[in-house]
Amino acid sequence: MSMLIINIKELLQVRNQNIFKVSGAEMKHLPTLKNAFLLIEDDKIVDYGTMDKCIHNQAKTIIDATNKLVLPAWCDSHSHIVYAGNREQEFVDRINGLSYTEIANRGGGILNSANTLQNTSEEELYQQSIKRVKQVMKLGTGALEIKSGYGLTVASELKMLRVIRRIKDNYPIKVKATFLGAHAFPNEYINNKKGYIDVIINEMLPKIANENLADYIDVFCEKGYFSLADTEAILSAGKQYGLIPKIHVNQFNAFGGVALGVKHKALSVDHLEELNQEDIDALKGSETMPVALPSCSFFLSIPYTPARQIMDSGLPLALATDYNPGSTPSGNMNFVVSTACIKMKMTPEEAINAATLNGAYAMGISDNYGSITKGKKANVIITNPIPSYNYLPYSFGENNIETVIINGTIIK
Image (tube, rainbow, N blue to C red):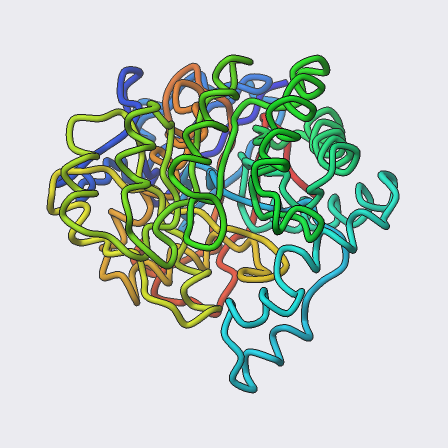
């Protein structure tokens, strides 16, 4: 099946094959073509260029994009979209003055979600989750990393990962699975943290590996959760099973987790609301992608990741949603891009780079996703008629997406 998009006002993120991420000052540059066309065959981008060079007229489907922009679908490299229930009462509790930590200490937070999920069947969990997946696809997300971590028992962590696999098998969106059993300590292990780490390493990991349920392993490396020593033990064990490290780090405290992630060649270090010069220095020269989650900062009223400091140090940066029931109940990457510009002082070019190509890198898929490149997957957004790409983050309350194409198919 062939699809030709013609009269594109501006085609964004046009890249050569060998560009897998952009860093530092490079992030200010967003390569585009004006008055362009884009040709898709089956699920691949096969050609693009300016309209005066368009010789294709036999495509089965022709879309006229006059006054519209076309760009790669968003790549959301950090989500917890598979969860049960919600936590709207904690939202009200925070309005009434309780902190995230205070809510967690009284049985809320991650443990609340874990209790709900443990009492939810796999089928019901799947049905709840696919509603959210369909929603983010309509909002332009074409690739999605999904974490476990709301199970916190062997059976429930496996249940989450099996649901993630079902989503991967049944929907066109690109899905990468991350095992996050080290998200919190269950109540029964509060006074026996080593015991729970042993469960992760000796019981969960072998079963996950046996069923090939995960691509990555993640740890919530934070004071009151998993220490540097805990994190190192868990990441080392995961690597023995072929799982590539990622880390939740520096959300509330900076105490060496970034350097530990770099030491273990983590694909990404995520959150980074707190950052110091030692963290910046650790990331320099590494292949690890810093990932900011601005809608989490917005929802919790905590500091934003210092994007300017990261990029001005010559480093790359990716943007993701952190979609979860407690601290970011939204998977809207359009809002993430807007918030990055408004609150983190990223330029539209930097934010779009961070949410497409660098987001794909943080998922390990930038060889096939994240840019308009011949041979890459045909995952693209067609906007409504808008003045320019600056309008995308500027009009933060609008849905400027007219059409989403994933794997060469229009998402209805």
